[in-house]
Length: 122
Image 1 (cartoon, rainbow, N blue to C red):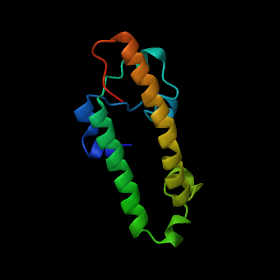
Image 2: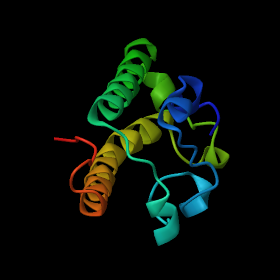
Image 3: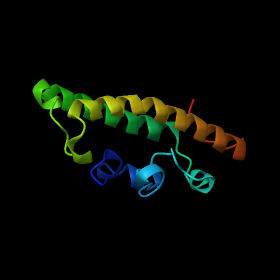
Image 4: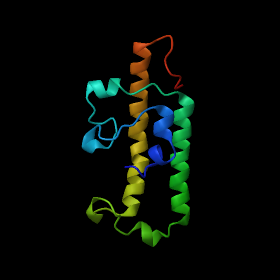
């Protein structure tokens, strides 16, 4: 987890949010959070979230541009090699849809809690 862009590029520090150990399997994805854990997520503005999203997408694109297709079909290092590198790239892209839904839900929560000063995610 420490090798993820959220940590290596300083996003955890910039956002004042370190989700390690939270949620399903401790991955820090909102899935599996308790209500208290969800409420503890700090408000993040749209610029911070867009910048993070763009950096992740650039990293995926850079990886795909230099990785031979034969390597993508090889088993990945994680999860006992049960999935290929391609599977995990595809999974990350599919996960973006879920993360966007999580961000929309958090934005709605913040807006209800503080209608005058809610983070701008529009």
